[in-house]
Amino acid sequence: MHRFVTEDAGEIMEWTEIEPVRVVPDWLQQRSEQQPTRVAIASPDGSWTYHELYDAACKYAASLRNLGVLEGQRVAVLAKKGARYALMLHALMQLNAVIVPLNWRLTGEELAQQLADCEAVMLLHDAACASLAADLCEFYQVRLGAHAIEQLPRSTEPIARHNVDLVRPHALIYTSGTTGRSKGAIITYQNHWWGAMASVLQLGLDANERWLVPMPLFHVGGMAVLIRSLIYGTTVVIHNGFDETAVNRAIEQEGITLLSVVPAMLQRMLDHRTRPYPATLRSVLLGGSAAPRPLLEQALALGVPINQSYGLTEANTQVTTLQSVDALRKVGSSGKPLAVTRVAIDTPDGLTHAPNVEGEIAIQGPTVVSGYYHRPEANARSFRDGWFYTGDIGVFDEEGYLFVLDRRADLIVSGGENVYPAEVESVLAQHPQVLESAVVGQADARWGQVPVAFVVAAGNVAEETLITHCRTHLAAYKVPKAVYLLKELPRNASGKLLRRALKERLSR
Image (cartoon, rainbow, N blue to C red):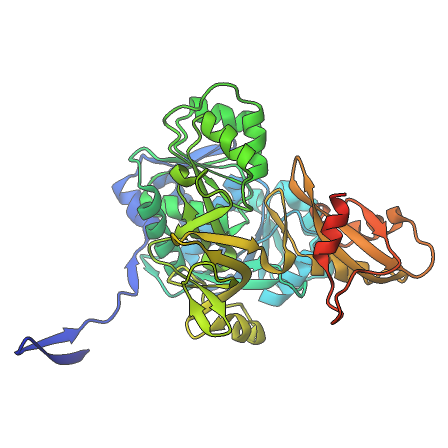
């Protein structure tokens, strides 16, 4: 405790500084007591009220502790069934263990690198991922073994935590980087709390909220919806994969109020819809990449209230949001910062908010993660003076709207999945006949973008041979859909690769 004395208008004032609040009541326990019969999770595999979810989470937490999991240890979860993933997420929260969501679209080799990096003590998987889990374990031996979620016993002696320590790590979510080596972003409970507060200030809150997530929950966006809905005491609706017909039907018949999708998903929904959407759908959060004008016009004509956003794992999803009313007035913009977030442009003269000045986007606020797990060099490079430097290039217009010009180091967004060229290029470099390569994104009607590769080879090599080589080391969505052989890659006078020139070749 500290005492302060100031003089204000000639009057001496004294007060005592109060320590910041670090601990709040456990969110799930509180909801179980206050809204026991409210549906917390609805999915094709069953629904759980808050009371049922709390009971299951506490019993599974006890089972995991009986298997040897301790507070603070990292436990990986690999599950295609959203309800299975959600149950394990809540159980690990009651145990104060750290969840490591695994992307089941990756290969066992790729996932093993993540498990080794975070020193995971256990792998939990559902039946749909059993084969991948076995493949993963060939590359990395989990100390306490791999356990099928469906076969995990429910202890008859539940354990529970009663508080949420806001500065405690909740999750490690792996995000790829320009080097091709993935990094584990440390997401704390504070990041979740302030993300929920920023979201509700931006979107409001409906007493009967039903937030539909038809995308994989291993992404930070999917996990954020689970936690925010928990904090609000509302219902999250989970679909096991995206199906435009199922999503349209849920909006029409199940009272969906919020929906999170990427542009490629929204386009497929609209292509199967002829009449306006019901007024109960009050917001569609669109992330992943900028939406083209034709898509925006088609959506608005059908009554879709679009809120486009710019976000990243390191900000626990959203950084800025563009309101639906500005969708056509500010095409290409990601909107303005959330209430708890500062955004600036880095220039040689320092950070600025001035209009029409291009530079690296830097962000600051309580939703920004505390750093990368065991990555001191990356932390020193990206986290400086209280700001996170995103690597994305952006600019403000005269009204303060942010435009993202380049997604960090030529990131390719394919169907909502991030594909980093460096990662694909590093795999191509392992082939003995590849001298050098460059991977860029090509426009695709279904996925938004797909990766394609330009390769300089030593001698004759079939394009299909290189694609097969990539397929054995990379997730399917990262594999180049085409390979073009060149005598040399385009470079400028200083030898820097000109990816823009390669993109121009694709548009000819």
